[in-house]
Length: 505
Ligand code: ADP
Image 1 (cartoon, rainbow, N blue to C red):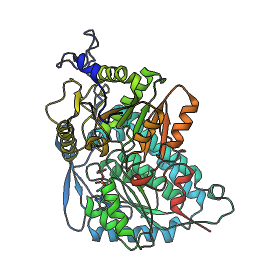
Image 2: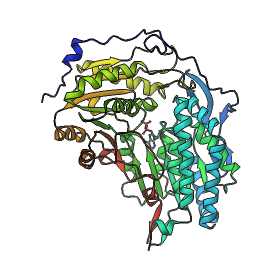
Image 3: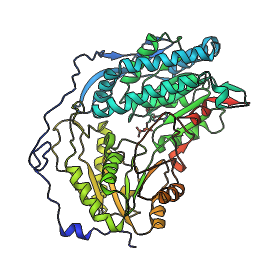
Image 4: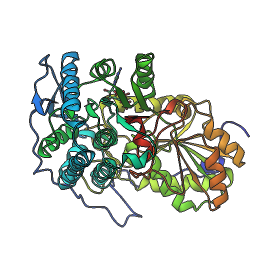
């Protein structure tokens, strides 16, 4: 079939959006009233230091940078910038803690500390959720119902493994590695911290972790929890800063393992730096997830799934279903339903409990998404945006669909990391699978069909670490996650997530 997709019927019936001024206008009957989450009880300092050897410590350079609320563009606090000297100090503290305490205490004792961290996250869950939304722009509903509970669940899950490693790796001797250097992105700040720190501690390693520069606050609040939990000094060190700070961790000789989640671009730089070194590493990188809808799929359910796959967390999800592949016979129906559903999505204040799509995480990411919108239009694709109102200040982006696109379009090939969906059609299952796999990425995908056999056949043929069927974006600590091809190497989560942190003999 032609590479450019057919949307003729739609062009004959132009879409009529509802009133642009209404926040949510369900057939003119109803608007949602504001439902703000109170942030009055949140205590934030004006300035945050590095957390090294159990103490909050000023950075050697004396430099600080602002962390901004992307919904208001206003600074929230100053964050210390760690340089090589600080990283050196943090690695030394982690090594000392590893040798003197963490590798000496019993596995059961280690497990108790990790359980304690899990419970402390639960106790302060609402506070963490609010800070996550203020610092990162994600809707409170998501940080409250997804990020923070899942972060606690990861600590609970790996706490359970701490004294059972011999069952995880039967007939092997299990040894920890030493000091793990961990670098995480801004899309799920506390959750990514949990994915990294929980398995590292459970396997007996100590850590130096760097959060992303736009979302350091929950990692620094987590440092407070480490202190409250009485975790021995130096077992967890949190160092803040941008790319150079990350590079100083990657290149430090005293580190035994690097765990990185972020862009494929930076992942490649890290791989080059690590080539020839003894360090173990896992990389979880970008994605361009195909979401395949067959003609026999339950359409309304699939439409909800598509919305969840790409607009969840503003599309700031490496496993987002950003490429919709829909079988030709139902394409127009699916697109029309999607556009209708998009009209009902509320874009706005992340701290409002009705908000579906919050703020884009940073100015830089906001500009990148807008650039891609322009690229898409210049490439000749048809753009469809929801007509909802968006706040005047802050970095907000309307949910966007592109139709009339082909495999060669940049918006189809490249990761946008925003609420932007491209839609292509296919006729046969083979064509759908071929299009799904025609990408350098392979992190996640989705299949929607009524037939179990089709799920298995298609799922097996999609080259992705995860394939969801008749659902999307489901996470659980027991389930491994990771990519093929340029989406990375190694697995996090589940039993598989223990392996990168141990030596087996
Ligand atoms: P994203 O597109 O998700 O922001 P990045 O790869 O730019 O992904 O950032 C992910 C993490 O990697 C952040 O914590 C960032 O500060 C860090 N980082 C950026 N550049 C480098 C680098 N050269 N070496 C190590 N870490 C880096």
